[in-house]
Image (cartoon, rainbow, N blue to C red):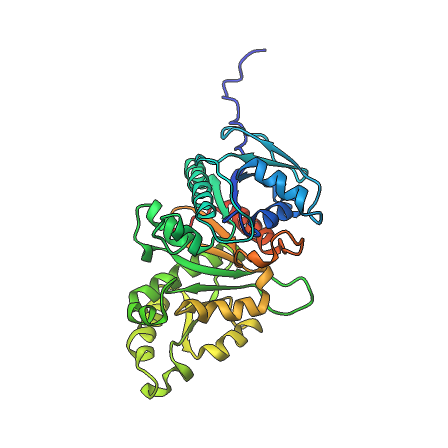
Length: 360
């Protein structure tokens, strides 16, 4: 056939690589990963892989009768086959294999969790903007027992990217409710992370609030497809009552709100936190800037703990996670809810598809 003078079209891009980790394998992480694997619709949009010991997943499938009957297949890192809901495709982590006692804190569990995270992080970084990381729950005592001086996933990832801990923000994403309730979607970003309340208040700054608000606005725009409405929470009761209960609102937070508005972000506040979350749950805001960990976590988990997703902002990669812990007390009982893991997978795939990275 004679040449037409046109080069052939480029091959379609390989679907995004989404690496799942179980967190601490002694907890419910393996159970929620396996449950979500069989339920998620993301297989048609991405290549899912679980970074774990294949034998561990087989043992969990055999010991928890409520889990779906899945095949577990170990694959090479460069294997490009699509994933399906019937067969769990597993990449073995680089760390040494050792027995992990299930249902309790151990150094072995901490080493296994960080080892899988290291391998998954490497794979996602090599995939660039076509990769995402979805993590199961860690136990902070276990990783400290294993010799790692890091508060959690968020700070570990910041350091792995060569950034200070403060470069990363934690956001909780509450997808729309499907049970007839009115709350959601809602995104909540945290200005400070895993630290004492006294330390968090000492570290609070106008620049930190601005950075968190900008990251939240960028992520919500990717998830919602429009300019989000953001409310900024006060620190003190009643918003400080004009300085009677503290001056952080006028001295630190209000200037940050003004700077966000000057940057073109639809931000307002500071508002007392006890009424701000109620307004947001009723649709008044798409996102909230919370000043410290529990100020944001408690209301989101009350509104929808099992469908909430933890998303890391400020890093050059997409990372989402479940919003619950290791739940050692229910390991193996067949009652672990995979909804948060399923939502975390969906959020990661949507963000990769929108071209968003953790840095905004």
